Amino acid sequence: MPIDEREVRHIAQLALLDLDAQALERLRRELGSILDYVALLDQLDVDDVPPTRGAGTERRLRDDTESTSLAVAEALCNAPDSAEDHFRVPRVIKG
Image 1 (cartoon, rainbow, N blue to C red):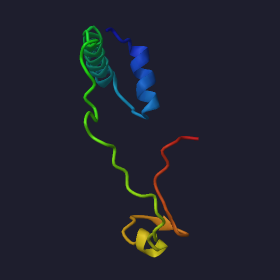
Image 2 (cartoon, one colour; image 1 turned 90 degrees about the horizontal axis):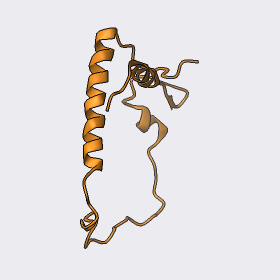
Image 3 (cartoon, rainbow, N blue to C red; image 1 turned 60 degrees about the horizontal axis):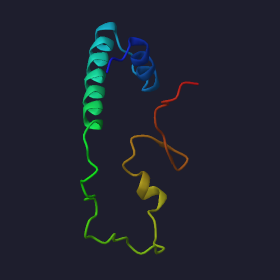
Image 4 (cartoon, helix red, strand yellow; image 1 turned 90 degrees about the vertical axis):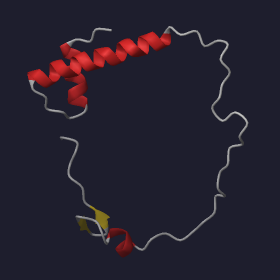
């Protein structure tokens, strides 16, 4: 399935990727190949294929019980950057 450069640029922008023309072209081809494969899978007749996810198994969940959490100092002890009892991370959303 062909995908045009405009769509690839939009996807790259959403992912905050700064790609040169060569990388954009490579990504356009790779995404096109992936979409072609998904289209091929979409053509398969799976009407007679029984579901297998979780077949014969019971979903097991732990009890929802209250427990103690880490102390703030213990949670932050290996953090590369923290301030005022919070983790500090680099800004990822331009604004």
